[in-house]
Amino acid sequence: MELNITESWGDLFYVGLNGIEIYDANQEKVSLDIKNIEANPRDMNSIPGHGQDHRTLDKLINGENNTCDDRNMWLIPFNSGEDHTVQIDLGRMTTVTAIKFYNYNKSSEDTLRGVKLLTIKIDGRMVSPSKGLVLRKAPGYILPKDDHMCNDIG
Image (tube, rainbow, N blue to C red; front, side, top):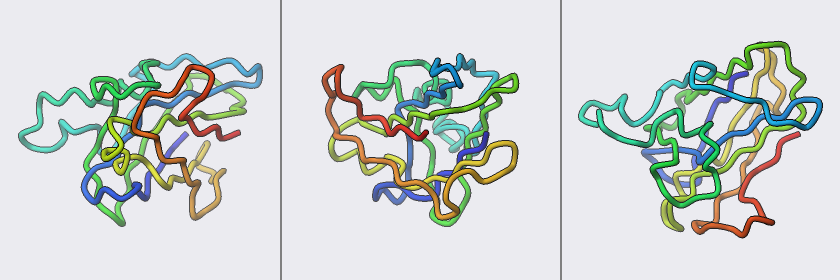
């Protein structure tokens, strides 16, 4: 699976997410490990001088999604017009029935760093509209457990 982030909610320099969850045909969350996921750019540490930034790729799948704590978020440099990709290898043939995206939610101001538009390819085939899917902007605060700031695709 390849996700290509093409637009943020307004930040011109960075884009990120709190998390991603993928669900199979039994509506069960697919277990992912860091070995299953790659990104380009990988994270903030790909920028010279940012070697100790904690907003790393593993945060996309650590399960700490309903948070404003940026130690549980993924952030990358953003350049309009360029590809910003996340590749996910599920490790086996899997019917994907849903993907939940938890948008960047550090604060109300920093929600501008969230993903606004992305495309999805599975096995090299576009499964989203060619212009992409719009993800809901995060609220900038933690929602109650019965509400979700995620975007369900499926």
